[in-house]
Length: 404
Image 1 (cartoon, rainbow, N blue to C red):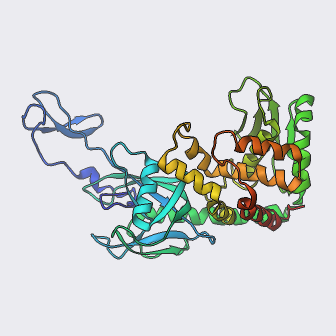
Image 2: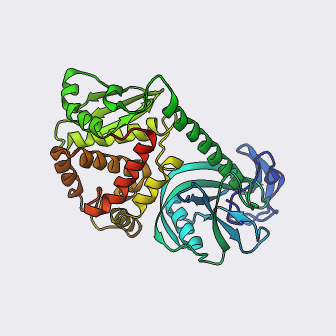
Image 3: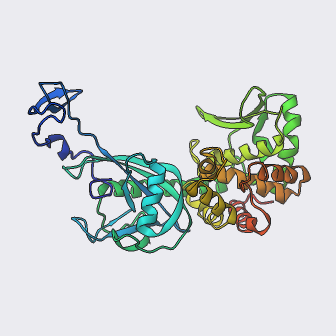
């Protein structure tokens, strides 16, 4: 982002590096400032009291909202030197404001949309404005409500564009982000094609074959869940995932990918829903390995999951979580609503509910009710609210040839 409220340009061009602050007086003792080298750069310095005036970059944020075709929401700028050019809706982080809250606020102010922020897509330094060096953060966004319309006078028009063929852009770092999205989409298409055509492991292989229990006890405890998964869907190319029981953990379960190896650890003691917790972590496995690439979660931006993201964002449960996060909820553990709105968590919870319902397993269904009633927030979906999400999973698994 820049002093103009948006992303910057090619980092190779750095006019700021040669731009000096005007000579001023020390705010502490009133003596004139001189330029001297401090901390790796030349800064205004007071020889009287030792005050150094550092010039630090401002922080800007943007939310990348995509439609069902993977096109990116952009706005035409209304004024300033970039009037008439397009950018991803963006703005500054204000003093004492969280970066994600700032991103949501700017999106709502400029477009009228209410969104939850997911993972970080990109971070870039912007040097195109010699008067203001900025650092920009682009977040993935999921629309939760609002009406799309220019809202605060910063933009005159809003439209979705294919990231491969954007309109004339105001800021070069937006071009870097759009090029990144285009490259990722091409990689996703290749991955999907490979999963459907590679002869080594045909699509639809039982998921249980990719799981390696650490012991016979672990194997017994997860057997029921694996049978439920295999009754609902198969899988394509998937590295093995090691599963172990660790009752020393504070978490109920944990998934991790390290050096190309994926693991799931489960706590069985004092865990009211161990089977559902394991199923939740399997959702993370699919998200990060089967659908994602190199351990990166697919749920925040993967084009193949556009239908799922859109479906989730229209549900009442998602709306309630978003309101709890935006407005605050008395007695709610700080950060829980925000964590629950993260795309990987939404994917894992919706996947676990999908398998529980599709397999018609009474134990998993009962554990869903336990989790849903635990904190007074809809961590899972009730009744017809889940229909669109279930349909999205059916479509996803059917398109891959995995659906039973």
